[in-house]
Length: 235
Ligand code: TYD
Image 1 (cartoon, protein in one colour):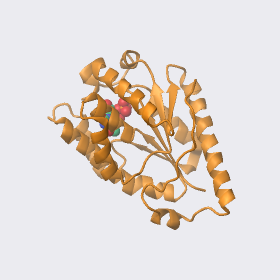
Image 2: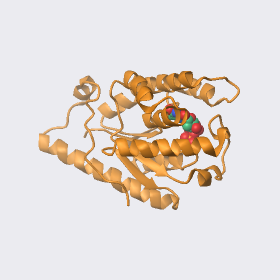
Image 3: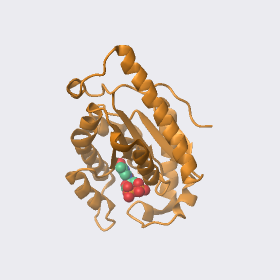
Image 4: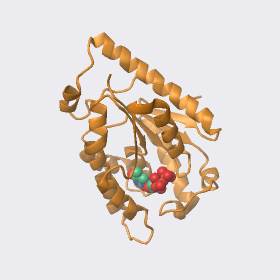
């Protein structure tokens, strides 16, 4: 069975981490749960630097460090897991850089996309759940403040606007989920969508007569990971 690459996105404290964990638990052994930045030895070291408000960091340097952590994660974890037919569940991925560094920090979505295209060689999630909440309501949720959260609700609003633009730009993979609802309601919605996608994948593999072997997928060209079918937003 082919792999599936799922990412969760949203402003700080939108509930992504909880939803990513619940999805991975529901999928069991087939799932590989990773977070960004992190998930590799390099990524965890970069994470500590990136989150430390005491370390001066220019927006360009910030974007490049996130992209470096992501490049390592792609090669070390994501591509091998997809090649083995696993479901990769990522708590943030490339769209975080596009929304935070590209839109909110003002570097420009296209310029940040360009460095990430270099870093990822075309790897993209098959489906991206955008957990949509009002940024001030999210800020009121409990949690520790880091470099980004301490910059307040104005940054989070700019991030939220950036995500909305991304959802318009990439409708083939973005699924917008109203996340100001009970955790279990959001989870059921997400799980249903993922199961639908897995069923489509399984039918596709059956129709082709055989599932590509792990080695074949691993040797495939970057970006070969099959695109998800068109799907609409949640009403
Ligand atoms: P994290 O603890 O993962 O926050 P959350 O639990 O809200 O996801 O911290 C990561 C912070 O880094 C978060 O504020 C978003 C920010 N970030 C970027 O600015 N760009 C990126 O590419 C990524 C992955 C995260």
